[in-house]
Image 1 (cartoon, rainbow over the protein chains, first blue to last red):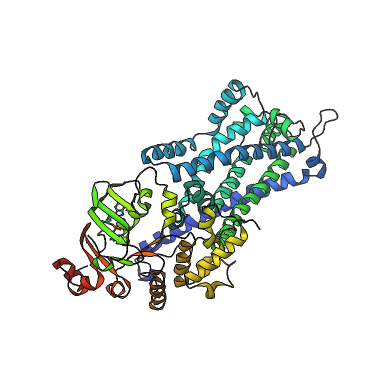
Image 2 (cartoon, rainbow over the protein chains, first blue to last red):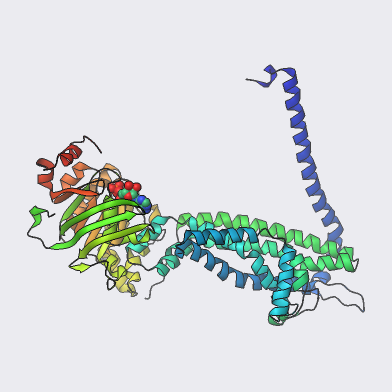
Length: 296
Length: 259
Ligand SMILES: Nc1ncnc2c1ncn2[C@@H]1O[C@H](COP(=O)(O)OP(=O)(O)O)[C@@H](O)[C@H]1O
Ligand SMILES: [Mg+2]
């Protein structure tokens, strides 16, 4: 049936709905593009090599975000280093070892629930537990550990999902040759799910870049430039926290918009990386796993 | 029950009152069977009658299914395979398995074959090279893949993949090969090749093969066992089973009246 054979009221209705949807789509796009353009226009003039490569000083008044960049890198590294073994380990346990399906279901439900909790609550708990109880005080490490707890459920779930994509027939083939559980996991299952773990890491990195509430409580606002290990034990602002501090407490909107622009570029980069990795691993999977080494 | 035709060969695997349950469903009911060495035994019967279950019990692959429970005994060379002294890994080294759908690992041809030997501790390159060549030759696929050893096994054709899987199973020098409908996913030419291969392997290996193809059972097997709803109905030499079965249900099945 063609549209022009429909009664006129029906045609008017369809046309109106179409227009409304078109306008909604237009407004959404315009808002997104508007925000991006606005941030770039306000931020880019303030981005300079000097801003990126120096620390801030009060006298003379000077703003540099190098410490914030380093803090961001430290916190991402520290979080991933703790998060990946824990999350992947939990996923491997649940998928490959756990036999009690009820326990698995409970843990999965708990993980789902945990990932829905507002991050400021993680911040509060992280502050009480890591900063006070565990004695880490306000530090990058306490922030990183709080982020670990926040992101653990999601990295566990992505790993679980990718473990599920490894065909059961691979496992059976390996078991039938007399391989033990751990060998099967190490040689046949894990190579098939590295992509899931890596994609999970990239997504987690994206969330860490964007996190502020939990870090305000746990990692603090300092702009001091430290090496990695000293940095971990000291308070420090990540880029996102620095953005908040500059905009809200110091009224330095130029610096705030510069950081916003940088964060937006980073987020874009990370999302593209995640997409590229997914395709890359899909291709790799079709080509097969890397080979085992043998002694000459 | 005994396959009378092979009385000259020693029994390598025997089961006694073997029962298998999946939760409350009984898939095998008191199966007692003796399988002679260096012969081909075909397991036939309609879908769901427990052939695969029986096969997977023999090398304890059914251990992998959480809801499966087993009672009764299975002896491999006189040793009870369910006893705690039995190393599952050793048992599976001696009793290899080939699956219905070819399941090469997504690795190179070489690494597929070397997987088993490496699992059992062989690391020397020279030894592995030797095992890989010998296994591929034994599985009649060496000529086709000798120039592709470093290529991904998933690039081979279905028939080649299945012979690769047979070679992979042979690489750990098993005594017994369990084959679960190894040709049902293959074209007729590949099927013929694999049947010829199985007949060759009989020289050195004991083969237990599940098949839906009566012609295949008749062509290659020495003994045939007919299962129905978890019961071993009849077991004897293939000639006898196909010419003068003693049970009406066997006759009905092989003449295609059901199944
Ligand atoms: N993992 C399993 N869980 C529950 N039931 C199963 C499982 N595997 C097989 N069964 C059941 O056991 C019976 C025998 O199955 P199977 O041994 O695969 O038969 P066949 O190979 O002769 O077709 C079937 O009724 C099947 O539904
Ligand atoms: Mg079957």
